[in-house]
Amino acid sequence: MMSIDSNEIFPFIQFNSQTSRERGYEHGTILSERIDKSIKVYREQFSKQKNFNEKYILNLCEQYHRGISLFSNDYLEELNSIAISSKQDPLWIIALNCRLEILNHLFFGVQNECTVLYDKQTCQLGENWDWVQDFEHLAFINYIKSNEILLMNEPGVLGKVGFNSYGIGTTINFVDPSAQSPNPSNIPLHISLRTVLDQAKTLEEALNIFEQNGPGFGGHVLVGDDKGQCCCVEFPGDKVQFIRNHPYHTNHFLYTNNNDDIKDKPRYQNSLARYERVKQLWENKKSIQSILLDYDDKQTYPICRLFQPTVFGSAGTVCSLIMNLKERTMNITKGNPRQYPNFHQYKLDKKRDAN
Image (cartoon, rainbow, N blue to C red):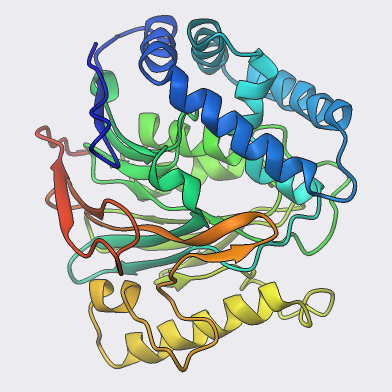
């Protein structure tokens, strides 16, 4: 095991264990302090919602716990081991992994979230992670040696933004669901992301995993590969929607024009404004990096955002990252790119081919 350098915003942590139980133990032990802080951040966010009560949250977590247990004993064992070694309630570890779904159940509405892009010419997959500022000091770079996965991750969470040695990469956006689904999938999107990175050797295999795991509840993944292919995968809560070879996404669903229930919300206007700006820059052949770092004082909703106070805390662009899926490299700013403009590179040494 390795210690965390407190001077490094996103420390690099390698999990060497081969079993789910041992990997969870590594995770929970090394990151116990960050896991505790992360739970406190989300507990505070949940509590600010009008319909919050902790019993309701934990009941939701029980549902997702059952969904994960039916889906994969290995992932459940890894989560339980994280809880034991970090000395946390197992349901709050589940909460970290289904926080996207919980926030949608609570009608969460923070106005700035992520912008994602894929360049088929260079096989680069990029994201601005827009979220609360606390995660500048909580997120970490995670190399899972057993399956050759490189991630930018949150403490206590199994899967997020990253790629595997087969050149399959994933990003994630929070999206307001168009309607409350009576039967949303009980497999959290973060668990599906980890499954894709663990198992998918091709883009089609990744898409099959997302479809089999169900409709989700208010999220989007832009998945790309090292062969110039990508797909927007939207999870509105009723049916998984695939938009093939669409290279960018913000925080509203593209599969439908029926956004009447949210079109007047500042959140939707934010997402739409960033989407139109990305489209303009994309058509002008701008690079992924220049688009992600795009900022203009005249823009109400710039793509790259300085931290600003909201009812949920200080929110803005936590980091900007670009994954070269051919080279198996991740270039990332360790903090808000307008304050910390230097990109730092992490690399998977091992490359594997699906054929």
